Image (cartoon, rainbow, N blue to C red):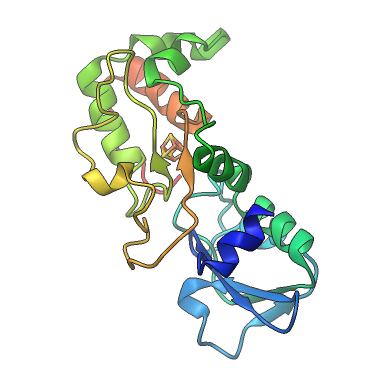
Length: 216
Ligand code: SF4
């Protein structure tokens, strides 16, 4: 099983979560910045991950689960590998599957222009975003420090234009720890623009040049 292989290979960090291996088959998850704390609130069911991931430290809803605002103060114990997989899928939906597909050279990416052209209804107008606006939007909205911890694999268009010239090269490197700590990680891969980015593109088209959103 891929997850067991990753854990055995010391890939025990994903996004802002650290995974400690306890006695045979038992795993302890915590916020990476809390790994040394002993005053954490204990959770004992993998399903609790959904509740932990819902709100940030200030109690604000987290619409983007890969935003770098996972709340602190908890420890989640899961009893087996299936529980670990479920918990990680609730913290970071779809990201284990994306990494496995990427490892097997099976992960398909979609350019931003393709994603925008697929939009219907009120989001259809997002296609009208100009290249320089898209460059600035992605550079701000997707950035790892305050925006999103995913590694961008998609391009801006079918010509292979970089998603944003305003992001560091590490933002596109699956080997890089997007938290900036520099540890081996299971990367949170982004194979196509999310609906929150599309919504921001539409907003820019309608309002003209507002690229201010941070940490969605
Ligand atoms: S498009 Fe990808 S990298 Fe950007 S905010 Fe959405 S999920 Fe994160």
